[in-house]
Image (tube, rainbow, N blue to C red):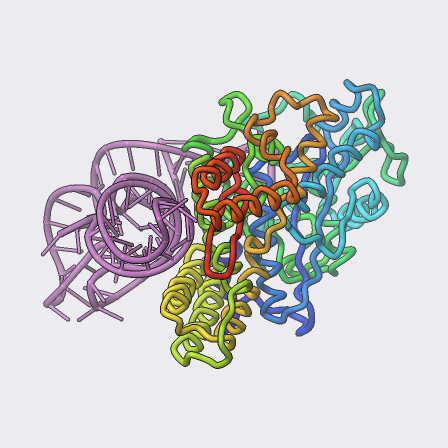
Length: 492
RNA sequence: GCACCGGUGGCGAAGUGGCUAACGCGCAGGUCUGCAAAACCUGUAUUCGCGGGUUCGAAACCCGCCCGGUGCUCCA
């Protein structure tokens, strides 16, 4: 069963397969590295990660290119304010961005493309556009795309611009354009601003041109899929199409994947509303990276997702259940053999979660069969009817599911540790939740020692001491579980 | 104003013509346990924003209304 994915361009579910029969070539709009990434940014990158991982799981190789916008108005302004070059300025945030992706276990694209390292390609593209009559230079030296040269403009965002009157809205800053909607390909240098001396004059690239130039460089004139946040659909992606197809006269990207914006507490996230969170903010509040990952991917990408702290707590509880169950399977002792019912349940769960993801990446639906399997297996363990062969089959399903969701394997210590180290260095220790600091103080060895002491106390039927240790640990977020196979503990 | 999306239990959320309306979280009771935790069981929406209509049959399709959100400008 192939993946059927909503395609903004056609407005329907289309099968997504590599057009060359080999690797799926995809381009995803990356960040403008002028600040730390916020959860809205990461929802998009996470959903693209789900897509990417699911393709790989389905046996489709992926060639995934992501750009880094490392020159734009905000970067120039902020770098100037900080008194550093744009390269020095963006380096910090680019590094932070990749650290954050790692914290969230977003896989690295095969190719990262920085705008400032592809100026030549952009200049060439502008030249080709000029040769095709689709670009013109204004008196100040800036280059613009001539919208009238591309009649299909609006086909992605379904906008009909034919009724738009020129000059209805004229931006004082953009005084020499033929038509108000023509957009900048190349911005003429202004005094003191970063610029490049090129064949089309001294200046810097417009925002849209970088994606056209770099996508075509790495993926060819025509490729399989282009992804980004819904906000980019217009005008950014529409402009990319216009720039690219005006030169190549080929379909730029066959499939367009847009991730909806998230809300925070039912409102649009914004700094002025006070509901703006970076990944680091959340880690310092004590939320685990896995909780954030699961929360941000559990609502299907085409639905508006309402971010709340309750949602993070819920995600943490769900993950806890999956991890506890996995540990029960891995540490338990099971007789050799198989239970046919569980074997069938495992096969069914595997098929069902794959089917759900094939259905337009329905991540919410995909979770259900995994939890169904979990309950069936727990019941069987309680009744002594789960055997070693079942354990292996079920662990294989969980591992497969985790290749896409990647929340069951516990990798949460490092992101939190890294966030704390960053907070210390960045002077943000005031933002760290006190409970988090209390928890960090306990090493695994110290916990093991206390757990061992409790076990001894229990054997001596000194329950007062045993319970005292348990509650002390509980205060520091450590939960103890007694079972036939011994004592387990975990960090909440 | 124009356009688009959504309104399903206490919360999140799946389901878009026909099985007892998934799944997760929460809550209540029970089993197990020294007590817990974990796990399991039972109960938590006779009903899917409201009003009409189509149909043998609707949460799902059509019309109207109400509410929430988003886009139309930089934004993932």
